[in-house]
Length: 163
Image 1 (cartoon, rainbow, N blue to C red):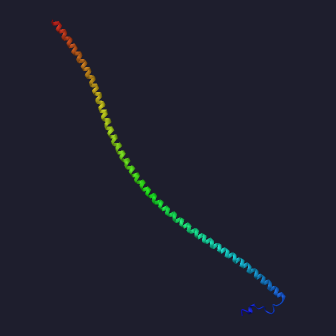
Image 2 (image 1 turned 90 degrees about the vertical axis):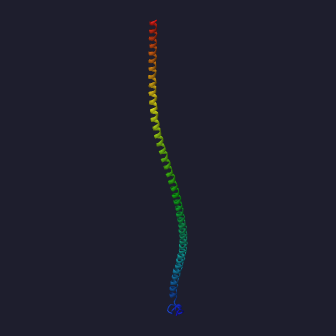
Image 3 (image 1 turned 30 degrees about the horizontal axis):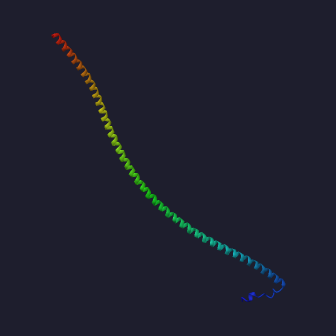
């Protein structure tokens, strides 16, 4: 049956029919060539798409690897920053303790200076009183000397008058 389908029927034997058949065959060949070109273009586009897809897959894998590396570096940086922050917090606490100690020492020195200032004021007052007392003593001594001198004079006068 398949062999019979390729046999030309007897009524299609004229030149006109052959010409029509040739035209149909030419059109079929033209459509076949176009189809082959389209198939080749589609194959080429499919190969390009496949190559492009493979490149995209490779790019995605590279991007994923870079993202994972970046995440790892970020995690390491965060750990380093956390350790540094902890170290700095410890140093800050130590400096606060040192500052508190220095403040306490300053307060103690200020209190001591205040006590010394009070003592100095007391000593200055004592010095002033001693100076005043010394002046008074000198005045008293001067008066006593004058009185002694007057008494001697009186005594001398009295002795002279008796003789």
